[in-house]
Image (tube, rainbow, N blue to C red; front, side):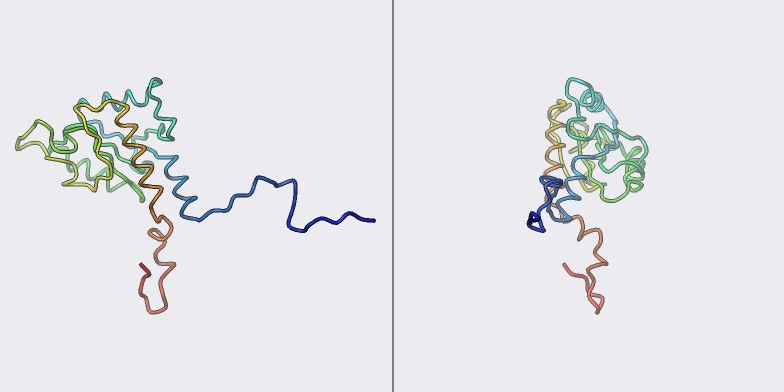
Length: 179
């Protein structure tokens, strides 16, 4: 007599099937593979470099691939004093980054201009770029940057990535886009 088994059960793939939403899967991949564009403009850049060293190890968070080409990056870390002379170059590099992209303002100078109340210093990079996470300190410790990176990862987890990027697929027949 032949043995009968339920048709839906296969012991070879047991435990290898994951059911999730497209948004959740895309956000999980994005948050665990952030490629930073380091914009080290002043003393905060030293702390940014220390974050990538073995003691603090930014690679634990999937962000060890620091690229110096904006076309390969998805998160810009603005570390240090942004002068008006440098501001347009920072904006140009940001505009060359592919979507989705995020910005971390590292340090008091990048966040608010710091102690420099001068005609030559931009009083916060948020006047030029949309900032997602602010890291406080002068200069902030590497642990603070890692915490800011974790805050960014938490923000990415809650995004509606598929709907926001493929909005034209959800358009109705009368060309209205679903919100």
